[in-house]
Image (cartoon, rainbow, N blue to C red; front, side, top):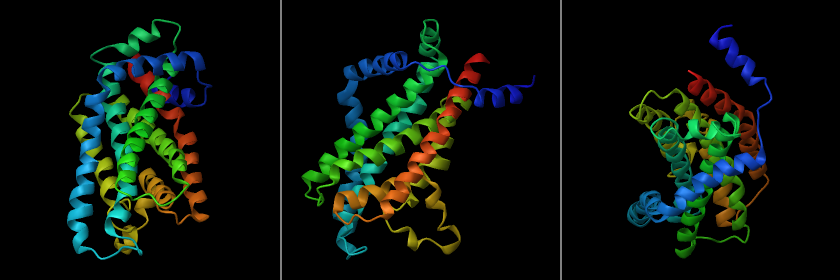
Length: 268
């Protein structure tokens, strides 16, 4: 049987998952994070904070309003989502690759009753946790600036969790194919940076050329921003449900892929 046939067969095989063992994998990563959380939070927190200062208070002086909002009010909710995106992506690329290759942590865990599916699902959950955590931390900064105007702000955890789960699966898929650390530069340059710049964080996507205006709608960051912004600013309407549904469907549809891809990488 060819390798491609084996992969296709794996996709349609029920995964070997155990909730207590997935929790063990997640808790192992969380225990390591508890030893270094101050440095890690600071590293992922400073960049969007600098964007908020430089563009919100600097460039914002020269921008009158966008869709009836001051520029910093328009910008801040998008940076909550991008902070979660970057933290999840760094964790599920560089972090997971280190555990998979240099540290051989995956190999050690599957030598116990933990299955490879448990390991990968634990990695997905941990990447999702990191995204939600950093998104909430940055939300608190936005709140301190007086930019939260809706009692529904606590609901941002839903789009944050769904978006972070998608980026966690995307990143693990790339990690399963990565030959070395240098290859992650391609992932960030081709996918992550364009999403950061063109998913409606810095300007409405209506300003994009008509021929490429549909592209942001294919990205999880755009849909998360379109949900988080009204939940923070208070102009909620029914269109939010469509964006949440998009995030939920893509999350469920993509979960199986990294389980198969990472297992195939380790078997090889």
